[in-house]
Structures are given as structure tokens and as C-alpha cells.
Length: 137
Image 1 (cartoon, rainbow, N blue to C red):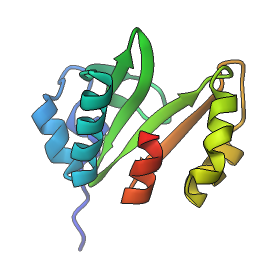
Image 2 (image 1 turned 90 degrees about the vertical axis):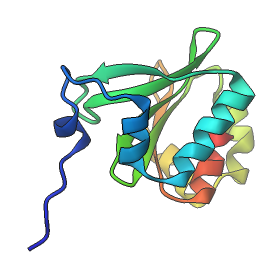
Image 3 (image 1 turned 180 degrees about the horizontal axis):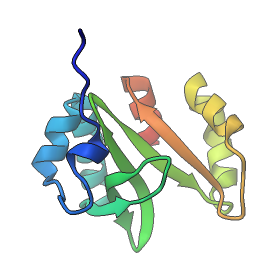
Image 4 (image 1 turned 180 degrees about the vertical axis):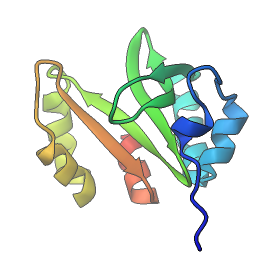
């Protein structure tokens, strides 16, 4: 019988904030280290821990910001992570200029995400190097 893994949300409820080391251990994926290094080196940004009650991705997450604006939000998962990137209406033209350079996965995700007044919120499951490179871009 396969052992059921404890979800991130169950492991770290609202009253139990994880340390960065615990987040690293839960994700346990070298792609996470690559993204952290990329953000810290290129944007001089450190993660801010926050708790979300959002039904789509509840629990503790990490937000990276530059100049008060969000770069991305990281949602830990067992063996991988999800990177939320918001493409604001002001950034849409630049994103669409890069569109042909993105992997098919990101293009499909973008096309399937409904635009709103706040833009498109791309929940990118980072599971391989190509997707990581798209998230970096």
C-alpha cells in the first residue's frame, strides 16, 4: 500500500510558518535553487514569506518583489514548485513579443488563461529546465 504524502498545506498550517530551509527540503528540486539564484542575482530580491487562503493554492508561499512590484510568487510542492507570474496589461505587449521563444507548455498556458483588468496570472508548474528558463524570462 502506497503511503499518502502530507500536503504542504497540512504540514505547515497558518500557525506554523516554515523556514526557508524547510521550503528547500520540501521542494527538493535543483530547479528551485537555480530560480532562487537567478532572482537574487538579477533582481537583488530576497523572498518574503506569506500565507494564502486562496483555494487554488492555499498555504505558505514566497513572494519576490523589486521596487514594490511583484516579480513572482512561489508555491512549494513535493518535488517541484509552482511559479505564479502575473502578466499585467502594461506588460502584455512585451510578453507577446517573446511569445514565439517560449516553450509550447507556456504558450498553451498563456492562451488558456483568461485576461482580466489585472492581466493574466500564469500558474507555472516548474518541472523541467525548459519551463524554468521560460519562468526566468
